[in-house]
Length: 294
Image (cartoon, rainbow, N blue to C red; front, side):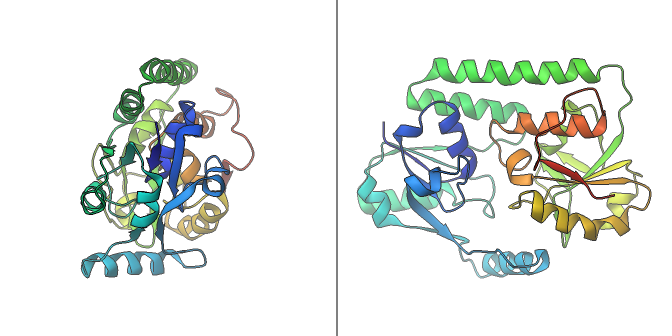
């Protein structure tokens, strides 16, 4: 089956299911595995925001959306040349990827008959469900169930390791300028890691807030996980967050690798957060995953 992935998390699911050789098209943001963007045809492009400050990125996104514009560009001719049978996309967030409606319209215009599967999880359980959905659509249901069983086994191991320990209050900053709350599946990651998520919106969209509101529940630990950034960028932004939480530990995390992409590596994120919240209870994450800023 010829597969096209229009979001990085779907690309990661495809490879985790052993379907990398069937994947023919990806987005310009698909960087896991690193070879995906090099070996596959890029069918979705977008603005390179490297070098832009968080506030500048936010202003650009708001401006584009207010104009009714798109943040991503579908290279329709490239997509047609690939003649895909299955396309994985989403409707979860216009800021994160191309909406499925745009894809369907393009396919109708091109005369392509690919199946389009939209992956739109809001909770950690629903993220695991998207693995099952991709497996079913690609005809590898057994592989999907095996992968899910393994991921749930790791979550169970973390739960056992932190059982009986106190649950520190944890605030997650998903964007720093302006600040955004933890939403969607992110509070689930904190709970699974043995923490108490505060100022959060579990199972709901992340929304703009203020640092005063984030600090009001007196979090003991603050995790900075800016969408679209790996650890180096998160560390830089976490330094700006430190003054707003004078009494809390502040940690930066590889957001794209561990937190914000709804795929198998969210379990890596749970394990990394557990290592922060409960030192010694679980093994430390590998270098490049987390860093304490204060």
